[in-house]
Length: 459
Ligand code: ARG
Image 1 (cartoon, rainbow, N blue to C red):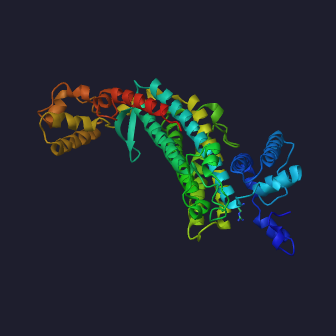
Image 2: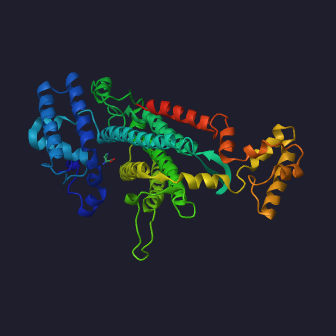
Image 3: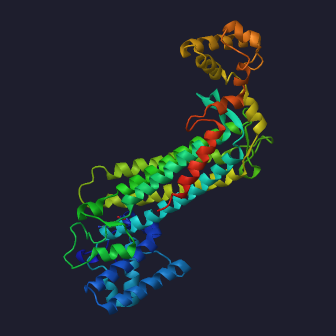
């Protein structure tokens, strides 16, 4: 039976019922729903809105239902939504007392509360997954703090960089992501319960009691807003979107760097796939899939933003559309972070190849220009001189390292013997000692700072 059947002469049509239902997906909220009902009934009893006997019966019934759902004995089915399911089940078990549970409450404040409880836990879980991912990146960085690799702009070799600095860059992104979830939690962690359908309630309730029982940071301050606020869903999905954005960049690097053309990293066999026709293939399917899943997470963000738009105050059934996208984004993001963490733990770096690549293709040209500038030549002039040196090398089939001092001096009298140390990839990287730069010292400081911030990621 519907919770609201009284007013109607006929039952709802089967197709309307099927279209209207949310139980098939909001059953995920069973624990949050029961937790919130336990707190609500406790508060009602403390405020003398229901008797202690009724509360005790309600608590026993709800705990029994929870235990049976978790053991698999009770199957969640046959009702419009999880709230109807739990309430109907309770009434069928304890009778009259169960019918008092919904006093001073509406499904509108109930669903908003349940969903916030769920999203709060989920955000914390994602932060923990991100912490593991960052710890893995830090491990790799620590192992390679003495190595250099080519740094790219426009996917063309730019300057030699410290290997650790490269991995630190992704740690920075995922640290921001974790911080973004923690920041969103401040607004997720607000309790709508006690807002009723839209206008609050005339019962002498004490919202502070439920807030404390449910461990919310604050109670909502406007009942109309509280039942119809889904900003927290949009914020959660935006935070998810940036996580997959960052992961997809790492995927792209992985796909490139593990190719034979680059040969910088070796993908673990256990995280690679083959081809049904080409026996030699070792494909980066995991990276491609994670990159590909970015689209659906962005899609869920667009969907909720569009659903929220133009909905008149206060609750409207449109908001039932807030759940499926979030559940899918949640699973997608958690799976992607977890699989990438596992894969990275087994990835190996081909240090020789990376260091050789770091030294080739005039990656130290800027250092030569800087050498001149540091000896008094205006930088723009120095840039022009080195441009000509590069052209000379290309014509003569030389490198900046194989050029003799005489050849350097033909281009500028300023050059001395020490220019030949400047054009070594490691020296080039290590010279960039500015904060956050690619020297070994800066990369080590980066690791230290990342570790310190990692420790502070708690809610
Ligand atoms: N299944 C509904 C939802 O997810 C619960 C709230 C229903 N409230 C109502 N007034 N119909 O939003």
